[in-house]
Image 1 (cartoon, rainbow, N blue to C red):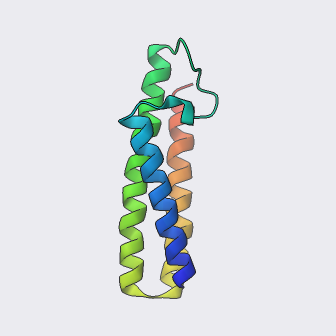
Image 2: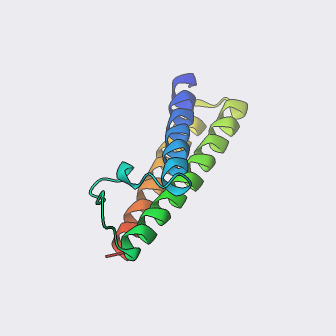
Length: 100
């Protein structure tokens, strides 16, 4: 149970840090396939959307990890970890499909 909660918190922290660097620090090279030079306006908008999605997802995952620590239930932690990571992946895939 504790391992699942730590995994949830680690995923949340990773998404939060990457989202911060992409959205606020404009380190677009953290995104696979993003050109280093000469990015178009559409590509920069896509990068900002990805950064915002990761930032919000990371904050949500960290909040869920706190709730899971408080609830201290193994099944709740496992289901929350699986559903939240699936939702994050779905959002990122949806953004990438919408921008093409």
